[in-house]
Amino acid sequence: MRNLTIFFIFYFTITSFSSCRKIPETSPSSSNLMVTGEPILIPGHFWVAQFDFPGSMDYFQARSYAQALGPRWDLPSRGQAKIMMVNKDSLLEMNEETYWIRLSSWTDQSSNNMGGSADIMDLSNNEIQMAPITANHSIRAIYR
Image 1: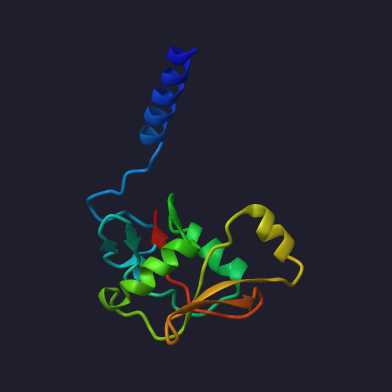
Image 2 (image 1 turned 135 degrees about the horizontal axis):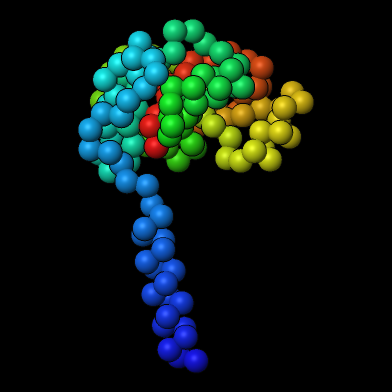
């Protein structure tokens, strides 16, 4: 029994490490260089597009446009948004406005589809707030 327990601990440890996505060391590619520009690496975390999208959008437009940049491009998660707020001085060209944060799951997204709300990061107040999904906010894509 003890050997079986050790085997499962070893197995889950190995599979956990092998399934982690590695952050590329070189700048990721994108289908829209006008938005991503030269992505900025937050060391040990993820890449952030150099520029905001040209205009503000509602949540579902923002999510679709961010994912259209290519594989692994998306809106930041809540945790990634917190990292971005801490590192906002190194993220060039970020305005002092509000940016969309991706919902944590498709369940959240479908329940909010009927006029709900989603998180935004408010850089002027350095906090995460709720906003109606139909509101227009800025978009900064991340590569995860």
